[in-house]
Length: 197
Image (cartoon, rainbow, N blue to C red; front, top):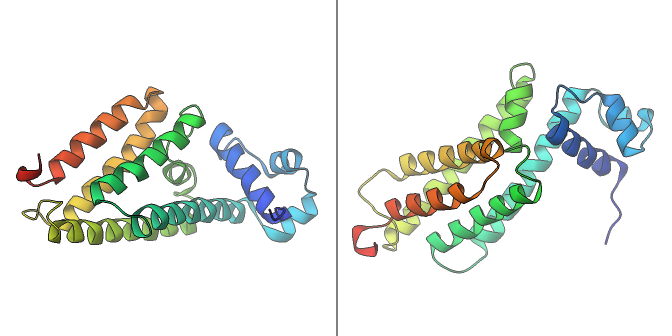
């Protein structure tokens, strides 16, 4: 296993601090102390807290994109099965951290999006791409008879994406993942043709 670079280590530490303390309650000095990396080394890689925040965001996005590729593109099975695997992964990851932090992407948007335009723009691009990916999958599912074809695929994809992000945030409030699974299963049933129900 390759050893983490100082840069990647700092990003991991910052992500944890942002998740548990919040972005506004985490100073660069906190990152220095928690990471054990010198301030000069950190500022060599990240010129400001805004730069570090953007790097944390990119790390989150990269992890999600890798998981999406693995579970939806490279794996076998029906779209419904793949969707359950993907959402279960998100559920389990959230449960492992005690339902703290909700959706890291939206948490960063709430705290940084109004003052860090790069964060807002990057998130806008990511969510547009997410909807595009879901749209393609739903279109393929409709062609294969797995998904209903009487509603616009892009609208179904947008609804699913919005529900997914919203539920991740609500779980951090409810501290319970059971409703997530039940709502997911109900939503997936609504996406299937009547003959599949």
